[in-house]
Length: 189
Image 1: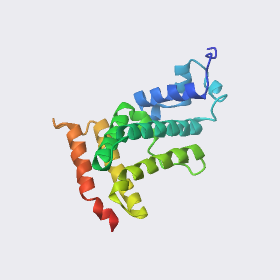
Image 2: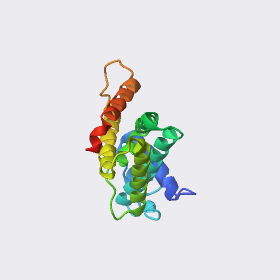
Image 3: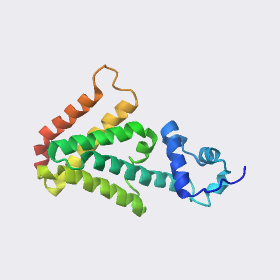
Image 4: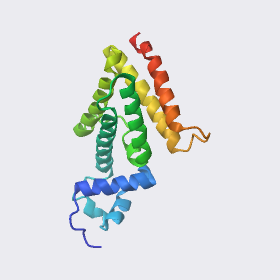
């Protein structure tokens, strides 16, 4: 195999995203990536420092994409409309990019600045969407955890085919988010 012209870190990440979305996080190996790119595995080390860095790069890329999906969906909206739209943006991203989404779930490594930055952006975005509910700083963080848990649980169940009953899944998601918002006062205590 000869090296592919134009191989760089961005190309490697995009190809790895495709592998992740097709085969899940465990399918993203240096061997699989090299095969997809038409290079030998050692050639990847000219651009990345191994599997751990590749996963970190994918997590950063995934968080950027997830942040964009949530931000775009909720832009120009406020209150429950913004929270609902953001939640739908989150669920849609997870559905369209199951493997990449999986890469975004781990709490960021404190030594990886770019990953911390993107995780911080996600937190700020969700807090800004929840701002009209006037929660305390601690209450905001509890609410973010609760909303994230709902959205992740919903997205995960949908990905795994856990919603077999023939009901509109988007209606279920909307109702669940509205139920969460109906009880948001609990985060003021």
